[in-house]
Image (cartoon, rainbow, N blue to C red; front, side):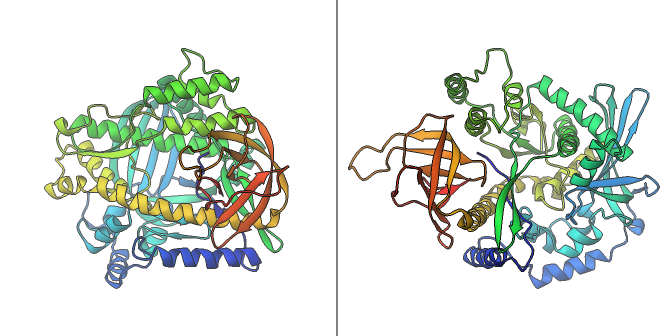
Length: 513
């Protein structure tokens, strides 16, 4: 079952939290060289110089929108704020002003900060820290859309009709000033109490319309909760955290902007798309058969996005299906093109069911900076510079290679957190849902035994267990041993006293997600 990286909410003073930090320090040491940790001195010096630039006097055709009351919406602890919004109702529908941090103002194309960002690819989020894409003087300082700070931004102006369809697209450089930094949980609590910020009420309304349009297009997403780590006395505990409805609405705003960016780039023949091919027919057929076997049939004529939205991860059979649905979301990549004939033959991102580009997180993701620049040129009737066009072709490979390295480190950190949290549960017995079953290996007799993968709800981890059971059923398993340094936890059937040696979490027999 797919999870986002866990977040550590355990304060210092919690023994297990300190142990986790030491373990992640060791992981980072093991990955030294593969994942850049510290910024070179020349990059930090260049960032300090760039931080002193005055966007109001840079000579660019930059509009002053500091009188517009933008607000940001992020996790409460965030300081690298990429987006700010101002939403209005109009006679015909809605007007969305979506300000995106103007990172290119501070990061010169082909300069030392640009080269370092290409080496990093994206901000890396680990349970207790983040490794930023840009030096913090930029990403959490002058380039961030912090409240009461005048900052340069790219401002998308999207005109929506009464159904939430985009009927007008514009983008320009501007100066903006956020008036409030809003946090997801607090905003949701206020909305639930009927006392929501007016902008958030409108965001939820627009988000609901965009979600309905996504369903009409046949778009889909896996709506599963994320893992969260909290402190409990002298240890840490893994829990589920479900997305707030306002987070889904906020995501729809970002998706809408990415679709607008893709539309501009395809129309003008240059840019970078985020692509995903349609699911292979054999994967679709297999998933349909699994839904029949589990008694939750995916009926003919129902789009798979609609079907996935009907599943509730709290139901064991639904949980198993959501795990198998990941086979329908494979092959995501980036496609750069500098002439219309180079554009992908099928530019649709299958999960979104529309062409799409990453454009709303330039502080945290490399590719967005280039998408913003090329979209600005297209919208204002200019041809992108040769320097920018030449850079477009290099970005997909940079994103691919850095993403793989970051993914390996994030998985290792997640496994470390999971095993550390599981220490408190050693020898306990749990209910778990079977989400996969594998037959015993044939051959020399020393292969893996018949085993099933199970998903625990509390704690929220998966594990391979030597036993037999049908997918979608609930079984009892016992946590036999935990080895935190090895990132390995061994579960056995509750009525068994021993188990075969287990691999690390994420392997064939270990606990992991």
